[in-house]
Length: 231
Image 1 (spheres, helix red, strand yellow):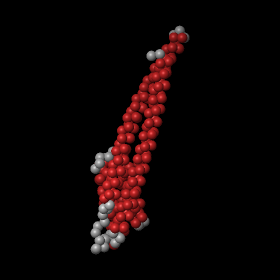
Image 2 (tube, helix red, strand yellow):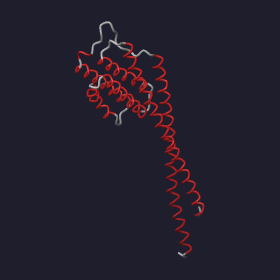
Image 3 (spheres, helix red, strand yellow):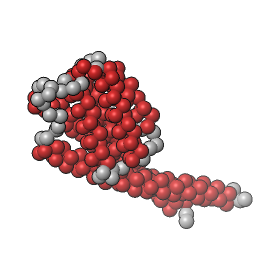
């Protein structure tokens, strides 16, 4: 292959590599939008849950309301885990959901924050390199410990009035719609993840070809100058 042909191929490969890099950046931006939407939905869900818990059973104690939110946190994340999401998508759900639950509990009583933050601390360590199943088990332990800690710290605030039933989140339509949107976002996240990985493979292949073309160009140039110089 002549020097001119090599240079033309090098320019073509460089342009392709740049195009693929742009594609990867666009996919990353879409993934960030999905993460933001997931967090927004989780916030709406827990605000709705907390609102219903307060309005449906006013006689329930503050501590019992906080424990209900913890129970719903685990139940919701267990339902998401059952859809077999990627570990990246599940970690995003865990982060946004636990933050929303913690904020809702703190709104009930700001003193609860110290107990909740302490119980949630192990989750931060568990977020590194775990499977969905392992992370869900950590969440179950975390919510159980947080509930026990609140009950021990505020025993007089735990029991509901005798004439009230245990709080439940029974807004089925809202819950079904929430899960439907979360599942859709998870599917989109998986699609973009697949597309990004494919684009990264193609970009890396283009970079490898560029490196090879540069070596060919340098060799061709050296041979050409050597011939002109009479070597």
